[in-house]
Structures are given as C-alpha cells and as structure tokens.
Image 1 (cartoon, one colour):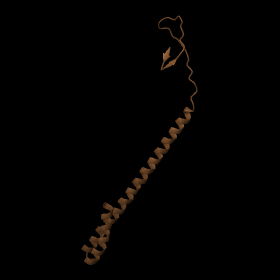
Image 2 (image 1 turned 60 degrees about the vertical axis):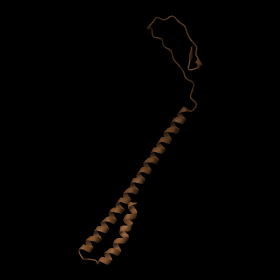
Image 3 (image 1 turned 90 degrees about the horizontal axis):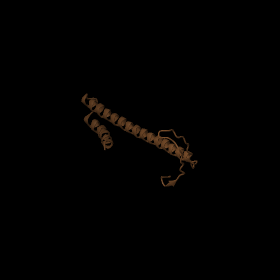
Image 4 (image 1 turned 90 degrees about the vertical axis):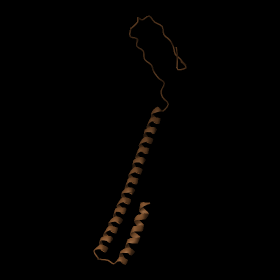
Length: 109
C-alpha cells in the first residue's frame, strides 16, 4: 500500500464485511519535538509579558501627561480667578499666565 509517498506492508486475510479489525501503529520517536514545543511556548510567554509591560508603561505615561495638563489648566483658571477678584494686577497676571499658557500649548502638540 502506498500512502503519502511511503510504502507500507499490506496484509490479506479472510474477514467478513463489517467485521472489526484491530491493529496498532507505532510512529518513530520524534527528534526533540517537545523541546521545540517548550521553546515556542516560552517565546509566546516572553512576548506576551513584554507586550503587556510596554502597554502598561505607555498608559502610565499618558496618565502622567494628562495629570500635568489638568494641573496647568487649574493653575490658569486660578490665576484668572485671582485677577477677577482683584488679588493681582493685570501685569502680574499676564507675566504669570504667559509661561503657563506656553507650557500648556507645548503639551497639546
């Protein structure tokens, strides 16, 4: 019998149609198949772990940037409120507001 380009022994015998025929097959030992399986599994674990750490670091950086932006906005609002209440002069307001606004503009790019 030829199967997948390999030659196999054929056995003839007298059996009836529908009779159960039992036989066993033994494959040759694999050449380190488990080593490749474990290596591939280890690579998937390392890549998955590295990807999750990278995503976490990116999210943390985004969170810090948002917090800094919110703090700058609060400082600008507080400064505008102080001017409105007459606690600081218009010149002091403008001199303090300029650098804060430029920092905020730089973060928005």
